[in-house]
Image (cartoon, rainbow, N blue to C red; front, side, top):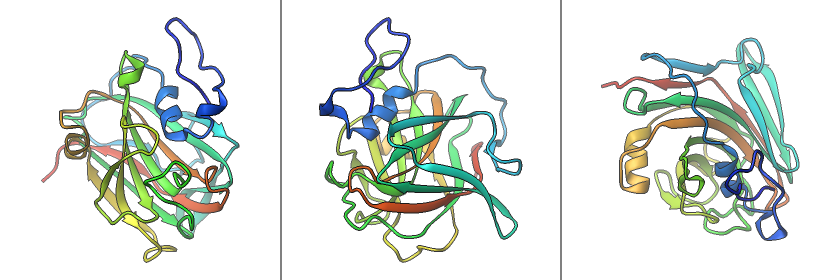
Length: 235
């Protein structure tokens, strides 16, 4: 796991045991505040995995490595994630005005939810699938994230602060095993969700990530992620 970066540090150090399981908080802090070139208006494809994982993805390891592998399901190029008591993410840095790209679309599938998973507790803070959108700040403690999760117990459309930090809010886009084994297409309005989560307009978007993790419960999970896109305003 990682700890807070001190002012002037060039890298993120190793955490004390107190923060070893704070995967959500660590993830927020690992997305450094950097200025990247902006992207043009219009749909922005992050990756459709047609040629495997693009070079823009960065691995962020919290506690053991989740295996992420580009595969083809039928005719669909996707990323398969497999976690065995591990927690790591794939992060893609961007620099986007959320008002110009307020919608996020993706598809995903899980084998099953986490049996001991419980969004309300640190011990249960594991998810078969989640998609993060990170809103960085020059003041690292103000970095925030909206976490779209395939919930274990929360009802669909529930919003809940992460068990480790109020700077990350979990949004239950899917819930339970009713749709396990099926491909589900999703689209969310980032601006609306950020306003509901934090009570104000969002700053610039700094990164998007996919993550399958089971380090807190010690279980295993398998998920698949399809193409991810940021979209302009729509009807």
